[in-house]
Length: 314
Image (cartoon, rainbow, N blue to C red; front, side, top):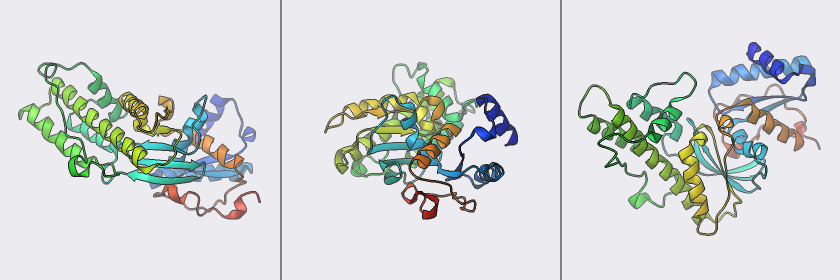
C-alpha cells in the first residue's frame, strides 16, 4: 500500500499537502481488502490533517458516468450494477438516494461468467479476469460444426416467470454445464470449437436476460427515468453494451439514452472513489469521524445512515 500511494502521488506530480481530502472505499466488499485501505486512509488523514471521506463502492460505480460523460445523465436514472458480486437495477433518485428495483435471486452475473470460463477450461490471462476471456472466445468466428448450427441456451425466468422482476443465473449456469458436457462427448478436454460455441450461447442468453428484465422494469414500473447507466466490471462487456443500447432504443414509452463509463473505469478503480468523495464534499460533507465501522455488506438504500449530522455543514 505505501508503494502504491507513493507511485500515485509521483505519477500525478502531487505532494500530500496538495490534496484536499483523503477518500477510501468503506464498503461493501471483502473485509480484508477494506481493512487495508481504511487503515491507510485514516493514517494519511491523521498525519496530514486532511478531511477523510468513506465511499460506498456501488454508489461510486453508479456515479462514474457523471464524471466521464460530456452530457452526463440527469436524475432520476436507472443504473445497472453488474459485477462479480452484484447484479442490481437501482433507481438513482438523486446523488444520495437510491432504490433497489431488482436484484439477483442467486449468483451475480460476473461470478457466473467466471464459473463458465473455468468449466470450459479457457486459458487465464495475466492481465484480465476470466470474464473478458470468455467474451473474447464468444466473439471468435464459430468453428465446424457450429458454423452451420449455433448452440442455444434457454433464457432464465421464462415461461410462468417471464414477468418476474428479478435476475437469476444459477439455472443458466447448470444448463451451460450440461451443454458443455454433451458437446464434449465425454472426451477429457474441451475443444476450441466447443469453447467458442458454448461461450457464445452462454453470453447471448445471459445478456438477453439482463436486457429483457431491465426492459420489463422500465415498461411496467412507470418511473420517469432519464437514462440507463451500465456500470461495474461486467459493464465493460461490448456485447452487453450493444444489447442495452438496442433495448433502450426500443422502450415502448420512448427511447432513453444509455451511458457506459470508459472500459478502464468499469472495474473497481480509485478514480470513481475520488470522484464520489468530491461530490459528497460539494454536497455539504465536511469530514467523517475516524471510527466509522467498515461495512462488508452495505445496501445502497442505507447510504451513509451512520454518519453523524455534525459531519455536514449546517
